[in-house]
Image (cartoon, rainbow, N blue to C red):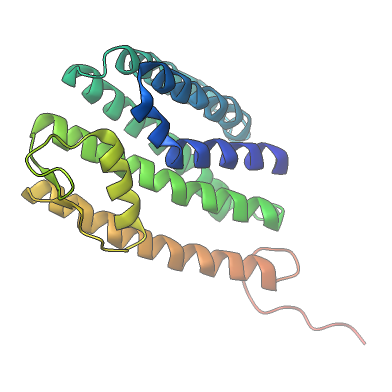
Length: 224
């Protein structure tokens, strides 16, 4: 499980922070989208540990991949952008739920696996909210404003950047929500990021300070 989680985390990190290569053209965008194959592959290995979850995951992955290919070929299409964002929300949401179940329900999981899964969830949250921002911007253009390009359309790459700035509560303000629902979602992301770190740290502290990793009760006194 550790190897699968490590590979999955690497794939997620490359996807969430390697998006600037998509600015180089459609070919680079297509290659970038192929990274999702790695995330899907290792995601299957992780999800199949949860009985009955593999089939829904594969179905969501297939829908998302089809929409991603569509968007890679027609980046100027708002319908393609909306389809990719909506399918990515469902796909990443399923992954997040599966990983959270692993972090909080697995009693005797190796501690390093809990750390890797928690980091993966945190990175996926940024991508999930970025996709939600993409849906809002596609349905209501002008919901976000980029000070580096006043009056211009806000691309998904800018929304990805803005999402992680919000999740980490950096507050740069260069990509800012200006519509009511966009602001509400941004506030929710900031709160979610803070609460996630707080609750996960409590879970990990419990796992690392108890002999069996269950996180409940005080450590047992050594026998004399």
